[in-house]
Image (cartoon, rainbow, N blue to C red; front, side, top):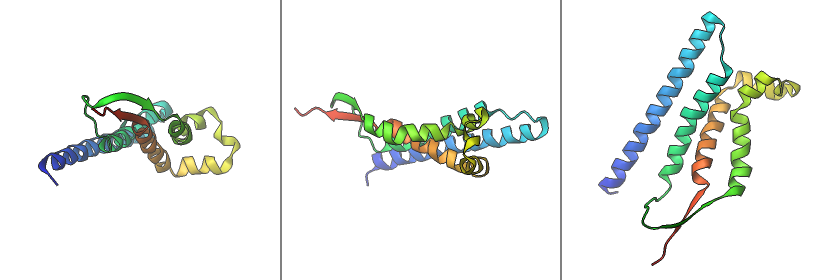
Length: 143
């Protein structure tokens, strides 16, 4: 392992730690405020989860890319990956909003999973961020 790789991985570790810490901090502070004021904001909570935990997935996806602008000839989007993996994870990441709108109340098992096991929403946001970044395919120029 060379020094450049170690520094790159250390930077990614620091960025992931910052995103995780800020996401957890904002969720906990929101839940504490909601406990006393009964002002539970579903849209704020969903935005926090998608932004911070989706950023963790995006950072993990960037880590697997070899990006150098001088060698890229074409940028393509893997639409099948976006449809088969990105769309379901987006739908599940927005499940607090679906719950607020009353869509998941028709399916009691999903309703109980979302209200009791909220880390599944966080995991789906990480998958969403990773899918968005890893579905971008970079074609290398061969000269």
